[in-house]
Image (cartoon, rainbow, N blue to C red):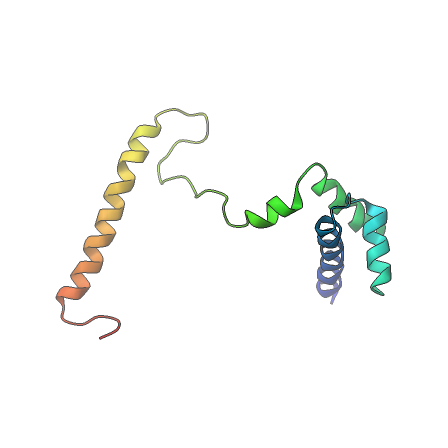
Length: 116
């Protein structure tokens, strides 16, 4: 039951921050708490403070429009950031894609497919 309470507390604070961002108002703990109270919800000040500090200096609307656009994972065997030698990993990527395409074609050779 503790998890449900925390989840709803986080959602209340998040929705309040989204309302503030949508109105172009600075996101502060006091404003988050005010919106939560206006909605009839109790919100501990710590949650409002944590969220406002996490969003400090960030454009929330940009964050929302870039959801899921955060680049892919590095290729298998690719060195960590700052490690040099990125060319071999880039050369391996097309080869992997070609292997996957060949595998799909081999299914068609069997005479049946997913939508047949």
